[in-house]
Amino acid sequence: MNGRMTDVAIVGGGLAGGLIALALHRAHPEWRLQLLERGATLGGNHRWSWFSSDLSHEGEALLEPFRQIRWDDGYDVAFPRRRRQLAAGYRSLASEDFDSGLKRLLPPEAIRLNAGVAELDAAGVTLDGGERVRARTVIDCRNFSPSPHLLGGWQIFMGRHLKLGEAHGIARPVIMDATVAQSAPAGNGGAYRFVYVLPLAAQEVFIEDTYYAEDPALDRSLLSSRLDRYAARHGWAEGLPVGHETGILPVITGGNFGAYLASIREPGVAVAGARGGFTHPLTSYTVPIAVENALAIAEQGDLAGAQLARFCEDRARAHWQRTGIYRALGRMLFKAAEPERRVDIFERFYGLPEKLIERFYACHSTLPDRLRILTGKPPVSIPRAIRALAGKGQPLTMERMT
Image 1 (tube, rainbow, N blue to C red):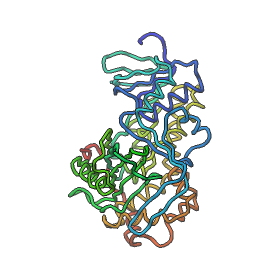
Image 2: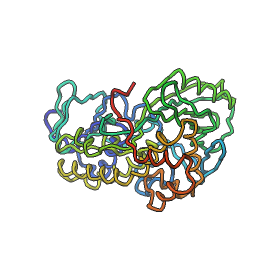
Image 3: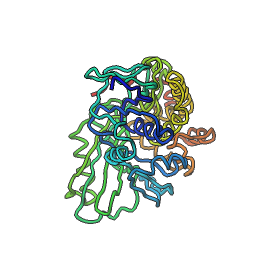
Image 4: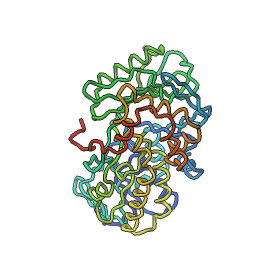
């Protein structure tokens, strides 16, 4: 591969990198692409979900070739004092279907698995074994890089896919079941906790225990036992586990984004995905943002590498600017509410108009939305809310990762 020049080398075959590769291939099928993934499959071990209201028609078209599970009758949420069914459809994509879809849609020579990257620069990528992939444009889509320049907490989860002996009878996804005990592992500063439930088929269900906490400690034994209890509570204790996933995702509440970008910047290299700041700061949702980014990059794909790098950085800065409301809510979640009362923030939020909730998840909240979210009777004390909004939070550093 040290010979012929690659048009675009994309480092990282997760959601962001895979969708950028697909969007570029659709827009420029004659180009030579290299999607370089350190792992043995594309997408890792994940399940990505999104609301039908999150995507434009172009975004839906980009994802349409992938096998998805679709629910068109809305979804449910449950809190101690509020239960609600909302109308938006819901979609879910498993990483194995993402992997098989990209292998079907991209030229075979475009995908390089088990291709760890030692270095990258504006002129190409050097793999762990020393092989050099020369490229006109390099796009870095590797994982989020913990940084002292960013502040916040963590969203920690464990999910389990169960095959049951009989039908579960659940018609719609349950995006948040926050009727569970609001507790975190000892010493983790308290948490907002909920269980996420997807009825994948008549006799298959995916349950995920999720909590927001100040420290990134994933207690596998605790989360597994919580899933056991939740399954037993619903009569699924005898279900056969056929898949699982775990994760620790950043919940960004503030920081110096310019300094963060400077710390990860390689001159002339475009940065996208979570590494580039393209996530929902509070929910960690990535699908609508990754789709929008992939389409935008495909439209600008003929830019020289340095120009595309500036284009992506400008988009990242604009995304940071318009997502300030979600970082403010994150500060309130971590700093304004007692641990057992953090559920009140989400419970109040789910009493707001449906269209506002839809725009919230898609990162398209309007100015009236922001005012509506932050005004009215607060679920926390006003003095604590003011202190939280004015506060800084804890650094999202590697030293805090476990």
